[in-house]
Image 1 (cartoon, rainbow, N blue to C red):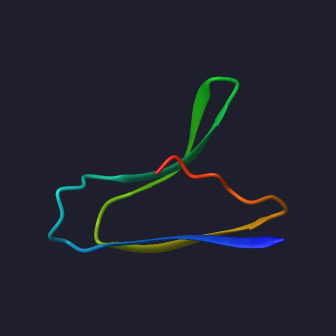
Image 2: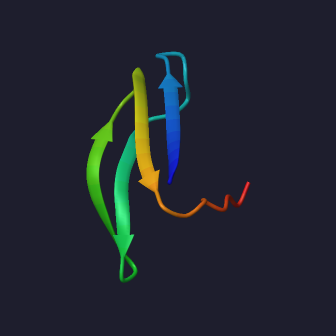
Image 3: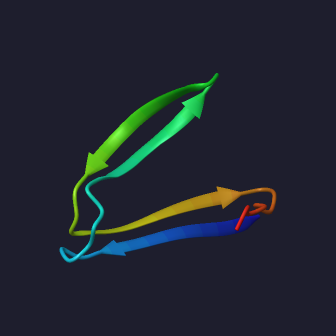
Amino acid sequence: MSDECFRMNLGEQTDVDEVVLGFRKDGAFYELLTVSPPIEAEVRCLLTEPVQSDD
């Protein structure tokens, strides 16, 4: 099992208007949360398979 983590830290001095957390299902996007900077966030996922990144 792999423990994947995504961290984000945006201060007030950024050009980002909003950060949106959501998911896509059957082609539709479902928005769960929208916040404006400053923001410090961490999302953790417990995975049974390795994640392949497009980066």
